[in-house]
Image (cartoon, rainbow, N blue to C red; front, side, top):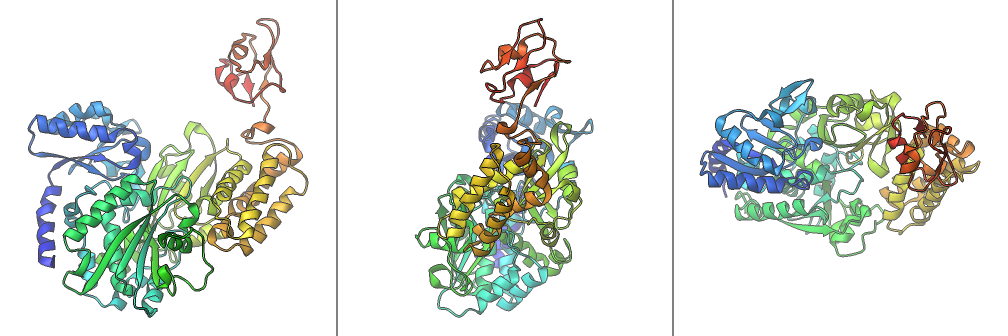
Length: 606
């Protein structure tokens, strides 16, 4: 394919995007709620009714996962939420009649909102990496080309390799996989390494609990990553690329395979791309779900068919990486920004964000939050804006307690820092980190000791076991945390945790071990009183640790009706109807909370 053919395809398919289209979210979240059945129903109705001027298409994640399955009517951007397969008939009729279906529209402040970009959830977002997710069919390369797809690759091939890298340098783009290393520098180091073969790799092994940023990009816009990797290959002098993706992402894997095949058929992968002399082949490698394979050297070992264990560094991958050749490795979100930067210029991207953290960041917003979903905001957006303006606040009128960023490698941000700008430096200054983009919100009912235990359980389970500090040290930390949450904590346990954490951080081989103690250290820093209450008072202030929780009946509120006793699964509630307040036998009580939910007089509490 040459640039004339590309532009013809762009012009032809730009007209298609202006047609009336029913866009159905076909990401993992919505598909799990039967959006695939909805899509089939819509297609069948349009076909049976012989409606020629309406297209029904699958698309990627819109981000507003709390409202899925989602359907958008383009080009009017009419947003329908929580759509069911049986709504298909009414949706088609509403498009034909040009009358929005009010019962499926989103409602905010007692008003229906028609267009999706007018919803509060999207108002403060700036979608760059997610720009095409929800607007194109990810299984049609023609639609990607219609929105300037592969124009950046053609532009890059008409620049020198140094000019491409300089544009990335100017942009200030930093790695979105967690470490935040300057992307342009990594590209330059790889370019400057002399070798007969170089590789470009994409890390799509997204393993943090609650994280699904990379998955959504691959499901909604796979060609953006393919195009970016081709640009990177040209810049560093590579001819072979690999995308290492989790096998647990079947939709992403399927769409990547389709996209790679389409790009090869169009001559956008393979030999002499655009007639400019670039040869670049791209293949997938599936990971088996090992969290440690998100670490770059373990990932490369896995691609080579070896056990997924990290290697000592230096030498770094830019010098000696995959198959002992210079290798460039970035994650999905990092690559997704590259075509936009090349097309619009590094200065454009640099104008977004803060002084040292440029551009936007995608977060998977979860936990105790009303608007669970995927958000992309300019660097420097405060945590308060994300939680309340975009996330819709904490459910049930409960108080915001903390947010965990960076998953098991990150740290918690307590409520007093809710106005902290979300950027690399600000998070680091308060003991947290950006990480890959998981953002878990917690309300007052969450125990921070138990939170630290949860993340450490994950780390212990996922440790590759190669180095003793991580293999043994994290296990010892988990044993102490388990004792504390079971009411068996002892004086000196906190100090032991801190000593172990310091040794593990300084002596572990890779980033997984070096950052494993972070959740413990950050919760100790801001919620030390909760640890002390568990150890000294044998009490869980949040009431989450069952071993330290007692359920009580308030004798003043008890109406002696016996409903609680009837519903107790273990017969722990003692007393007779109308013969005095009921009491709970603490030796029998399993703290299940059934009595609390069944009492009509709210006389029972933890």
